Length: 360
Image 1 (cartoon, rainbow, N blue to C red):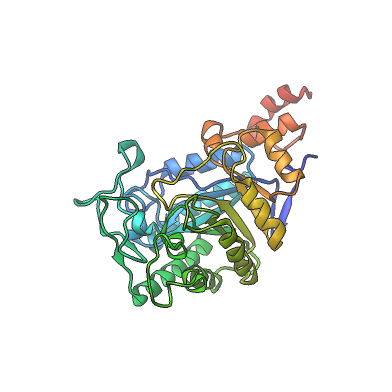
Image 2: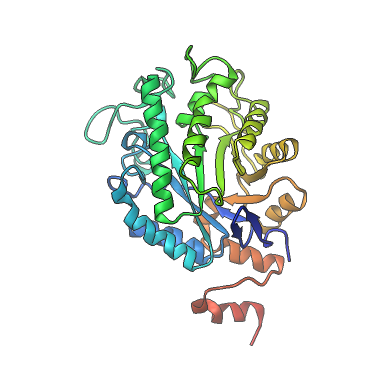
């Protein structure tokens, strides 16, 4: 059996393989509610053979959405449809996870296929918030600088959302602290100009991430995995660095986080990012092997052998795929064929599998 299709157990959860569907916003919700699009989108990837499927960034507050069409988990009414989605994923052999998020200063935007720009006024707009009144890019609305009391309200919103995730049946929770959204904004010196206990020193800037981790842990079952997604570098001088990420990962490990989902960028509008196959893998490798914590590799991983080599070389423990999964919902099953692994297919599809593997 290949490394890619070997199981991995974290706490009491066993993933049947190392392929994870990354959280990918669908911008298809109304008032935060999931619908049949999300059921079919996520369910298809369970049928397609993934070991873990992490639901897109789900806002912990209404004003924490990137767009008016984001999924939400800020109220109990959201749970019912999410339960259906989770149940379908689990019935089809994958593990269901959810990413909890707050967009911070990058909130109140139009959906991507309508330009994706921040909406300054009108029924689909609201005032973005952040650590400091520094917009993501010139011309955008100045974010409201959060008071300490408001910060604590957001921490409690993450806690409440995590409790709803438990009630919905998710088995993995990921805290979104990457891509220039609120938690990332706090730990980055580019966007955090505060002088109180949430600004200035490294320890102060990561305080909100730690507060959120602790709040989530207070309601998330101890036997279920907790991931944190970070941007390992901002690709800009004077910004958050790879060395900062190693230091943060050590703190998160000590706080009981199980895996670092290692991405990059998103907080500096004009950053030059050298994107290409495996371009973010070195970050996962460095954190994994210097800190001794599980990591996930992400970023233009599009071929079975490519993913296999990352794991064989000990650079990561899980492989996160995103856009390749949009192109091919059945990428895991196709990757298994390439690597010669005989994986389980749904009973309804067995006749097609027999033809591929030439079995009677």
